[in-house]
Length: 96
Image 1: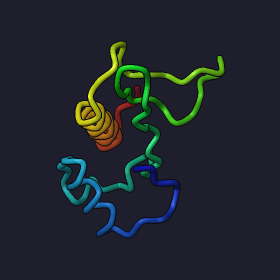
Image 2 (image 1 turned 90 degrees about the vertical axis):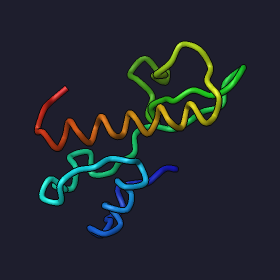
Image 3 (image 1 turned 90 degrees about the horizontal axis):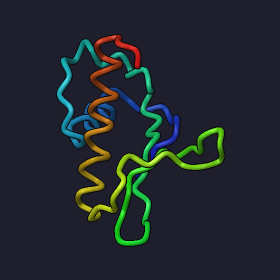
């Protein structure tokens, strides 16, 4: 599930947040500072799947968010958790 910087309507954005199981008050909808860039993807690796950033690091490698391969369901759950974490950070105005 990759979404580019396409403009989404308010209803589409809220539907996506519900899908990702993120609950934010409507006034915090602030078009989430990540503007729904979806910077993560589930990638197949030897022995299962891992969540990685869609863009490579300056070193030319992808950043993975687990050391051991996961099942596809676990990797998708981890990706949802990463999106929820990013949404909470942007809603509170907190920087990394």
